[in-house]
Each structure stands twice: as C-alpha cells, then as structure tokens.
Length: 74
Image (cartoon, rainbow, N blue to C red):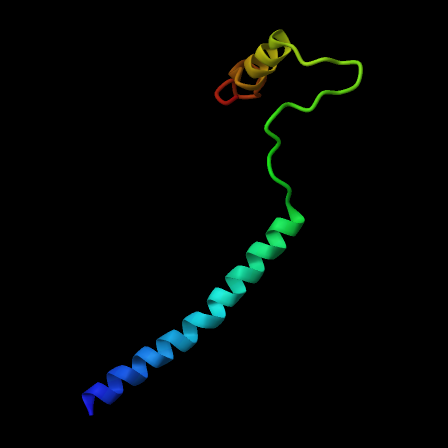
C-alpha cells in the first residue's frame, strides 16, 4: 500500500512540474521575441565617431560620485 502511495505522490509531483516547464519554455520564447541581444560593439552615430578618449570620458563621468546630490554614489 505504501508503494502505491509513493507512486501516486511521484505522479502528482510530475504532473505539477510538467505545466510549469511548458510555461517556462513559453516565457523564454516570449522574452527572446521581445528583447534583443546586447550588441558586441558600440553603435556609432553618423558624424560622431567613437574614440578611446570619448569612452574613457564617459566612464569617468558615469562613475564620478561628485555628480550626485549626496556625493556618495556615482
């Protein structure tokens, strides 16, 4: 009798997991359709070339805590 109960509980657990897996697959499909991958290179604006100096300046400004109201965060 205990074996039958164990088999039944395993079957119930599997039945509960299968729809969740199908939903996860659908969720991943929806997310891939909605969001694009991160570009591997910096997009260039026409007439404004990307240079190492501009990249370094952007990094310095982004991480400069003096530009915040509290001077504690960047």
